[in-house]
Image 1: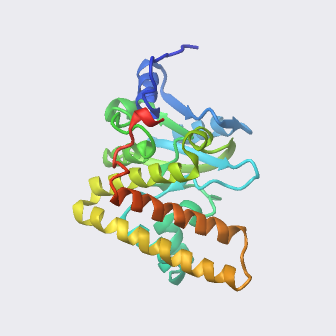
Image 2 (image 1 turned 90 degrees about the vertical axis):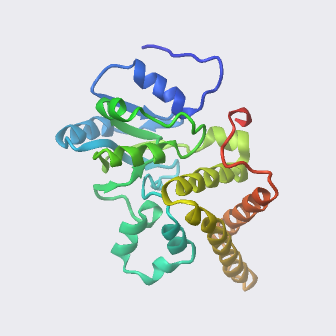
Length: 268
């Protein structure tokens, strides 16, 4: 075992790049410190990626401590997907269309399929992919790094695969929750997603994303607030309202200039 020690926190992407550059082997397993292996799924995932030479990155099923499946296979963020999910347009679409368009928690993660990206808590990556693409974007300190890298990986012709051949336990965002709280974590996620949409879809889409997110948050506040007032309040409704408030708070702070587009290493 080789330990790579830095004198400062470089962020997940830069530090992981250092480790991959120093490592040997045909494949690299990126596994978060807040995960636990539950079976021999990693070995089976390795067998799958070896059998599929056009797959550059693979991920498996990830579980929360209560047994729920984490939405680990996802689509890239786009203005269209924000509007479809945010304004419940997906409820008007056939289920297979919604699943293919959005993935994430709109899909049950019970079958193997190609995804746009898999979450960085568990990624099996070919070393050839790292050498070809250069790894994570070192300018991204927190959140969005695996999304951006998978985008470049796919542009180079590689596939990203989700395969439920095994499971790992993931405590999910434990470090950032302690440092930033749920609201702060949400803000950093929005910063990362909005910046990637601006990079990939241009300034017009970037300008339309905030009003789309704000409108969707207001819709949820209104609908689930009314449900609560009518006596149909539940934990899910409270979670939806809490998330909507975090979105509104983020864009209010951004309008005041209190939120930067780029997460700053000194804050984490």
